[in-house]
Image 1 (cartoon, helix red, strand yellow):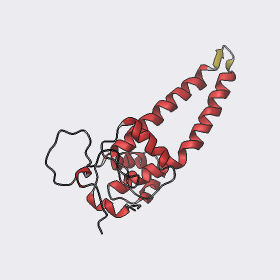
Image 2 (cartoon, one colour; image 1 turned 90 degrees about the horizontal axis):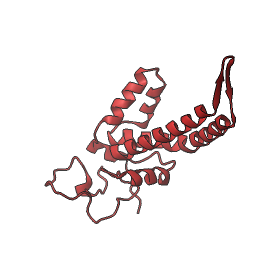
Image 3 (cartoon, helix red, strand yellow; image 1 turned 30 degrees about the horizontal axis):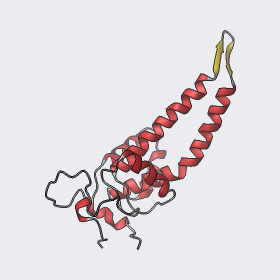
Image 4 (tube, one colour; image 1 turned 90 degrees about the vertical axis):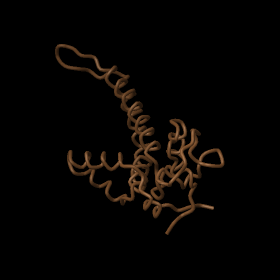
Amino acid sequence: MSQPQYPSQQPYAAQQPHVSQQPWTGGGEPPLWAPWYGAPFTAAAKRFFKKYATFSGRASRSEYWWWTLVSVLVSVVLNIMINAGVSYTAYGSTAGPGTYLGLALAAIWVLAVIIPSLALSVRRLHDSNKSGWLLLLGLIPFAGAIILLVFMLLGPDPRGQQYDQPMA
């Protein structure tokens, strides 16, 4: 079962090489149901929130890894805030008001991005024609994370189109 696609956008389609930075035809970004191969940084972050709890469809490597970069950077900043508020003495450490603010912001951040992060990971697995249930491999200590990392690094598989649900 083949879904309508942007033929020149698909990285696995036989194409003539071209110089254009936009790999799809028609200009602009592809529809939300389609993966955006070569998505720029800001577009990947916007699509992350536009597809907040969408577990169907596919996500390109660029969509996934740009969001991962955003998430890591925000986490680093929040950790710096948390640790900057701690004062150390000879008798131990004391948490200051900055620590509590950092913890509160970190909790808000985690609650805001946990569902869309899971959805993005499932869509990334779909792009390489893997079931989203494989995300449960992350529950296996150490080995599960390595297996998921390898899956997230895999390129797209044309059979992954089965997970697409085009919208009119």
